[in-house]
Image (cartoon, rainbow, N blue to C red; front, side):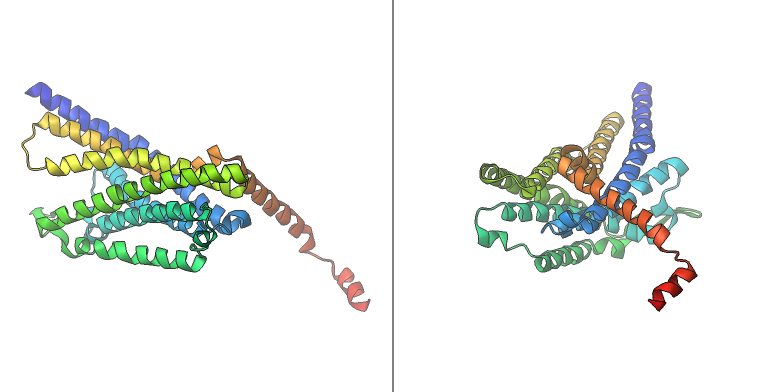
Length: 327
């Protein structure tokens, strides 16, 4: 029995180490990657004109909020041994709500990317014209309103429960709200996006093969980039979704302390993997696409060149100005 207890404590310490090292790395690299992704699809003309640019920007913003809030609070808990949700009532009500809403919003925008890329690569011209910037903005606004409304019971019913003097625990006043949030996150973050992305991944792959036979353009490069990103999301979403369902189905069964520790560690590793792939978009595009890197470096090079040219022109001698005015 004592050996099981020591093994369980060791597994829990391994989980804390993962938060301290891998978790911190994911927060840093995903924050930089998501910001760079927004910059690339906002500022680079060749990418900004793409019909999926708004979806990519929205997915990156959702991923940024999802990872920075969801993972940072756990990292702070491990490093400081203080749980923010138990310390501040505001964070108790807002933290989980923002994490769940932004995660589902980010994945829904990724679904929009797969749908848009399928329509763009379709041989039918009328299908290609279905995705416009106005419709893209409308779809993003609907998703941005829908998911916070779905998870609105969380900030309403989550509150501080006093456990002892000056010690509080963040929990729901209605236990069914916790179950409701868990099932909504399964549907909105795991199964619905995974099923949607898988279907349109296959359809877009078929369209890409036909597109390569007709011509090779920037569209084929972008499609290949997005197909690789879709496959990475599927690799992380499918096992995590299945295991999360297993945890919910067996949540009322009796567990030994050692089994609970193993299941906690497995769930932590799968969750870390989903965080990792969620913030990987920019780095995947840089790694697999020479065209994407070229557009990025060309834009940065032009920006530096303009900065160098603006410098000496900004200051003009007064005597030269007078001569120019006389002529």
